[in-house]
Length: 316
Image 1 (cartoon, one colour):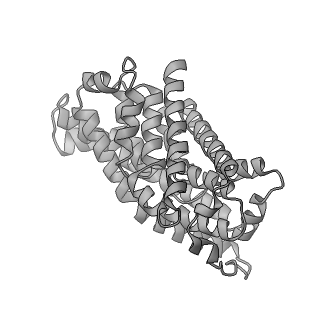
Image 2: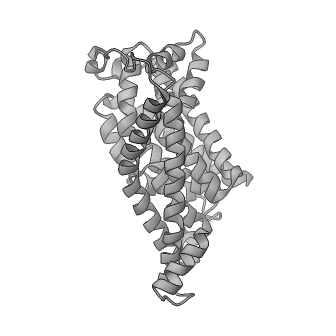
Image 3: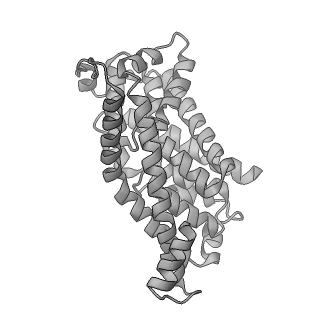
């Protein structure tokens, strides 16, 4: 149905000739926008409903596990079902630290939260297939868990800004029991808030992806980030870090790059760099982390992304 709509809009309504670059770019944009927005609304609503049954205080207690490695796994897994960007993940990070959750465990959450979430997983599944979606989620979780374990072993608690430990978290919301109707209303309100925040970034990402899809020469990416270039992953990560987008916004760009011949490992590394190590994210993190811990975070996550990129380029 979306293909028919995109065909009608591009070829009938706009009367654009088939085969032209601008035509292909517009067709790509018109096809992807409603598909991604529909997935976004449905998945956010379902996850928001689930969250109404899980109090935040219970999540915090769950993460303080006597076997800390299990805490890292749980925190990284929790990151899949949390907000879409570092801006909204950092308040939870602060709450975890103040509540006594080990620093390494909180970092596993902080790495996973912007890099992977339920919407990104569904969008990757829809655009690239189950294999790529599960692969991205798996390596993202691995990076988050290992990063948290390394931070734990380095004992860097003193490099968190002092005010973070002095913040007092208020009583948990939701003391009064919610009816099913209350949960539905709250979930739709959350969908509206998230959609307003995310939709512009998705549109920008799809527009860039459409431009790349329609205009980028096929041999351009093969020359600068192709499988034969030993620095391809490093170049992709270096380009991705200055950019800023959530996973939903960058997926259409990644789709267009992959369609133009970028290897899978390089593609995943670019996406992880944009979502997990972007420059705006580092600026925000500097508000809660001292320079030494921030530099350690960048180094550990960056090396992990490079290893993942080169490994999957090698085996696939």
